[in-house]
Image 1: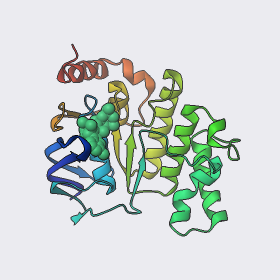
Image 2: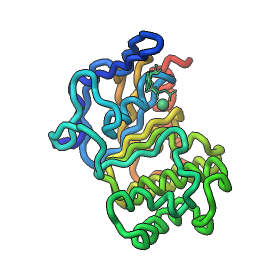
Image 3: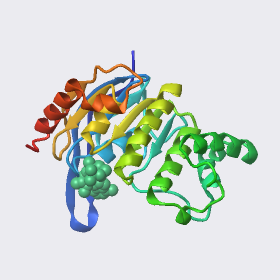
Length: 253
Ligand SMILES: Nc1ncnc2c1ncn2[C@@H]1O[C@H](COP(=O)(O)OP(=O)(O)OP(=O)(O)O)[C@@H](O)[C@H]1O
Ligand SMILES: [Mg+2]
């Protein structure tokens, strides 16, 4: 039985001011089993963030539906957590207060929430920065706080919108390892949007390639690499060939 399903899912935005309709997602179907890690790749503007927002319950489908364990998504829920594409920290809260925010929303007492959040700040390498404010951190560190905040609520479904894109290449690879390690510990269903093909292959069980807008899923690649994966796997023939195949599918060569 699969936990996350989309049936003929379409999203059309109305841009009132310009009197324009934009079809962002066009009759998308998928079934994602529990605990699967999916990475989505596709051209800018093809509807990737829109898809995550629909799963998060923040954007309603225009037609079709999306279900979790056969229940139609009608709004946000505790079972899902999202790391947004643009940093979404509250500037007046310290790092630990930001990271504990989702837990506090769930009614968990402040001290307990912060203790739990601290664990995820340690995991994401922010030990020692608990009492800093967001503006005192680098862009990459701010993204890690976002990640810690999402992980802290132990979601069944983790939605990641380019969470590592603000990081330099080295930090990014070490965060890929961290993300894998954290994911292996709790195994939420994960949907990661990324522009980095090697990151997609490295982390995912399945890589989906989307078409230009209106977004549809053009191809799905199943990644047959044992876990835990190592950065050195990125140099293996299997990995490199797959990367090439996905490049071609995106029409970049
Ligand atoms: N709130 C909105 N109102 C109107 N149009 C929107 C809105 N959000 C997105 N769109 C439009 O929908 C399309 C898909 O946007 P979306 O943000 O989902 O793309 P994306 O694949 O995440 O792109 P990127 O890779 O650049 O982040 C775009 O054409 C965008 O202009
Ligand atoms: Mg986006």
